Length: 149
Image 1 (cartoon, rainbow, N blue to C red):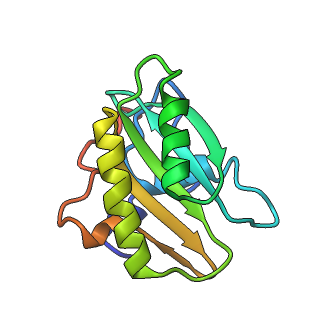
Image 2: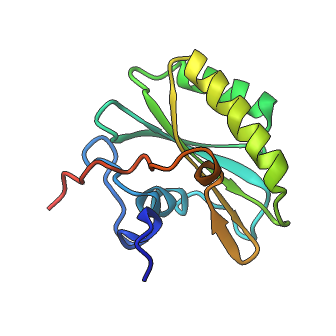
Image 3: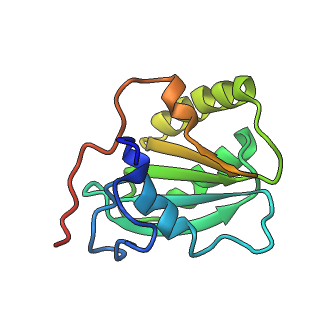
């Protein structure tokens, strides 16, 4: 088992909306799994968190692009207190690390300018799950502890 924050809890351990803090990438994936389409299609799922990192909104969008980021910002503007986002991209083909790095940087800047923190971008694809943010920083966003017992 890896020491990665991606594997600190079970996919079955889904935090309750408006109650439990989302304290790991695995918990965020567990929540996103509730709205993944089957069979798999290219899409973006956005989990919106409040200041205490509790899930307050979950929505599905087209595959991540700069246009999609604008739609995400508009969607968040209708919510009472969004502060952070976890973006989960579902892909049916393999990724391009260079394009992902560029999209991550632009998305992070756009969201930051809108007053939102991009906590994590998780990409799921054929036989893989990875976080493009690992190229951007050495510390992860999951330093909080869960309030659940």
